[in-house]
Image: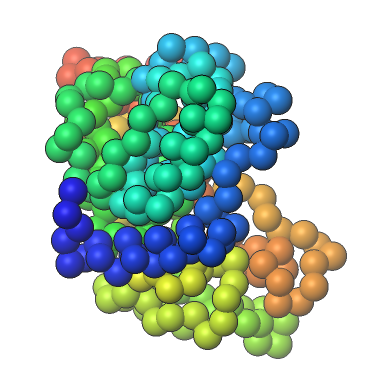
Amino acid sequence: MEPSDKHWHNKAAWDRLAKKQDRLARPAREIDFADPLGSVDGPGWLGGNIFGKRVLCLAAGGGRQGPIYAAAGAKVTVVDLSPVMLELDKKVAAERKLNLRTLETSMDELSELGDGTFDIVIHPVSTCYLPDVAKTYHEVARVLAVGGIYISQHKQPTSMQAGIEPEHGSYRLQQSYFFKRPLPAAAKPNLVREDGTQEYIHRWEELIGHMCRAGLFIEDLTEPLHARPDAAVGSFEHRSQFIAPYVRIKARKYGETKTKSTLIQP
C-alpha cells in the first residue's frame, strides 16, 4: 500500500525507530520462546492453545509479536506500515523456520485480506497513531471469522492528556479531552510517547464505543500494571501510580443471530 498523507509521518518515524533499534523495535528474546503463548497472553484470554489458528498481528512489526505467536503454533500474518519493522519479523521467522508472512499496509487499510480469514487478531498499542479508529475496528470485524477474538491494547486518554514531568509530585492535564489535532511533540524522550511519531487522543467513546458499533462485543478489560510505589519521582513507574498508561481489551465477533441479551446469560 502506498501510504496516504495521514500515514507518511508515522511510517517514516517507525522506519527511523527500527533502524536505531528502539525498545519497541527489538526482536523477541530467547526466553520468550521457552513458553511463547505464556509470554504474551498473561490473562489467559486465548485458552492456552492456538495451534493451527489463523492469527493477524495488526500494526505489530518489530520481530516480537508475530514470531512469538507463530512459535506457539499459529499461522501468522503480520501487518505493519513500516517495511523496516517488517524486516525484523522476516529475519526472526527465517532463523526459526516459523509459519509467518508479512503485509506492508496500514491498520485501517486491510483490503488485501479477505472477509472472515482470521480466528484471532492481536493489536498492540498503535491506535494512537491514527486520527480516527472507527475504520480500523470495522476492518478488524470484517477480517475476523464469526466467534473470532480481538485483543487490543491502547494508550489511555488521560495518559495522552497529561504532562510527562511531575509538578509538585503529581501530573497535570495539559490537553483537552476533545483535542483533535496531533499532540505536540514531547520535550524529551520518554516511555509514554514514541519519539518522532504523530499521536492522537482517543476518547473512551471512540476506543470502546466504536469497537461495539463495529460488531465486536467486549468480554474483558484489564489495565496492565506499571506502577511501583518505590519508583523515582518523574519515572514512568512513578507516573503510572497516578495515571494508568494502557488498557487491554478482549472482544469477540458474534454472528448476526447473537444478541446482547444472550451474551449476559450465565
